[in-house]
Figure (cartoon, rainbow, N blue to C red):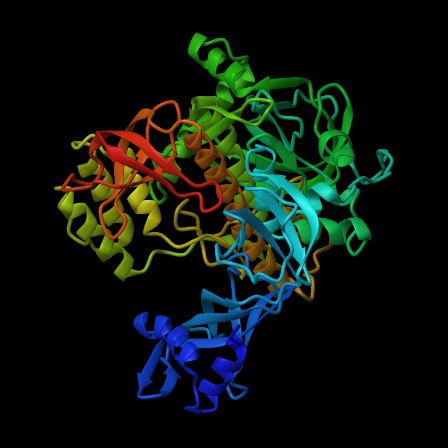
Length: 608
């Protein structure tokens, strides 16, 4: 077996004594333009570096094998682990920090790896590559998933025929398996009202959440006579002290993970589902944003944020509020609030965007088989709550000085927008670049209205934009149209909000705030990928049990790998097309499932 690290060290040292199998291995990178070859001499192309990934609680970086090169910051570890040998594409950063993205895992440093058995051979789940035959797997059967350590099987995870293996695989691949193995509890007792807390227990606060919600981050109350809006947020920082073991664990987790069948919480259930949950008819500690609203302009005249005790009087579901809006049966204050939030949204969309997109919720049977997929779209009740939360987030950001913790979404770069316009032109949507990007996107959405492809075009617009992140300076939120914005409203499930609460209370900025922002931004992306990985695996399992079934789909890619997405009761399932010919992007088609692989998550279908 070749030593990949030694091969690349020879390249850096300008050596030419490569063996035949080493040259054959390096040819792969030559074809990808990562390496340049002249006879038996190889060198890395200028925009690539190879080095060791270092993952710390404060973020990740790559330490190049070439000691004369600077370390490279990494935002997305792509499920690679500390000590792995990786190839990085260097990205120019105008702020002077060398950043890059991992494009290839060359050699893993893991002492253990998750593998599966196929045709009496052992394959790595992450890389899909054949594993050294030194491992004795005689007593294991086809489809068994095993943990390998030091060329030995140390644990049988289960078999691919078992639906319960999917979650374990995804959690392992993204280093979150401890969340189901580790006991996560706390013995914090309720904290009583103190003198500095404002007593708001007489106000008619209400929670509005999904019907299945157990944790209630926020409650709202609007006094229509005084035109005062209260957004009460669970005061998690009153229970979790900075630097405590509970705080360290919450920071490590960074976010709650919402899987199709369960929630893996950021803070223990004793807090998230009970003491920090703003349940009705019990006193709860809250961090409250109180806003005086100008009814005519639908703007905030003044605001304050303070610690309080509330007693929520109503527990509504989104469906409850939607029904009341439909029947015009909202009580006076809620009705006035709904009318206000409609004005707020109208004002916001002058600089922000309203993208027509749907969220898919996978519905699983208790045996974890996929039953159906619910398509969830925004409703009036969602909009009511969202505008209140956005307003509180803006006001929280306004209380910060130049440095803090901000939610930042930078403007798309011009090249991305130009590529978007080219893609739209192929759909017959001809839009010229306007004086600014906001005007350009507005023009795109307006023209899309005449095509019946509004949602599909919005997805293309979203794909052209940059990822939102947490940063220490207020660089604005392009998508929402805000010059300053932060996350204040969900400390039960986001560590960023917990950090913001502490800053607002103490007026002190943590010394490691830069590292905190970078770390939680990285964790956010990793967790999103974990959820996508599991959902794709569940889709692949469904497809493997429904070979031959025919589904309604829409073509979503016509380039190198033509593919389609199901749009019926199994919406969101993506399949590569085996017989694509010349169908146009977003064409409606019928497809028949041909093959599915649970490990690679690849589904193949043919147009019928």
